[in-house]
Length: 104
Length: 104
DNA sequence: ATAATAATTAAACAATTATTTAATTGTTTA
DNA sequence: TAAACAATTAAATAATTGTTTAATTATTAT
Image 1 (cartoon, rainbow over the protein chains, first blue to last red):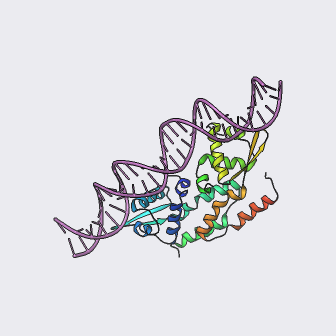
Image 2 (cartoon, helix red, strand yellow):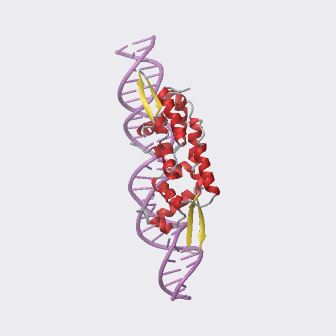
Image 3 (cartoon, rainbow over the protein chains, first blue to last red):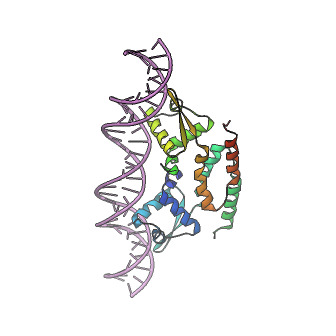
């Protein structure tokens, strides 16, 4: 299980998370947004998956990757702890969204 | 100029930031909290300084390192952008604190 | 000046990272 | 069944990272 910090410290991987926030996507769709090759993307996805930041869903020939919204906010916990202050408003917002399922 | 994400993705460096939040410290004081050597710490401090997360102040034989509170919250911006939601409450809290100078 | 102290820089190294090209697996379609 | 497609794994490599020991710089105290 990869650390969320390590997984998110890479620019491309954060970009992937931002793309996945809008909708679940296949590696094929994702590659179009980057300049590196499919195996490189695959490697990034493996890292994100291992950090539990994305989930994978196989549908025939394709695989769909989705953002784990809750986990994507885990780093915010660090700032809460660091500053001893709760970011309740944001979290409630996200958790409501999650309850309603799907987004945008 | 090192990226804040890269600088903060290391466990020891985040620990250093947490220690510095309480009060400015010298490398000598900081080393007591870790298992690695002084040069290793020095290298971590250089990275944090290059990311503008800490500032350095020379006083005779010693150097005092302080947390750059504002910068330490920069990563929160990512989550704001990602989720399109403002964490105003936290930021105001911090900025008030800064205005009052010193903490704890 | 010399010795002691605080911290850094230098040199070296093992481990990890991001990436590429080539080969492989699994699924659908003709 | 064979060809095409989607994606992964394998192998190789260059670059970066965290760390150590040894040497260096700078400041203070004797």
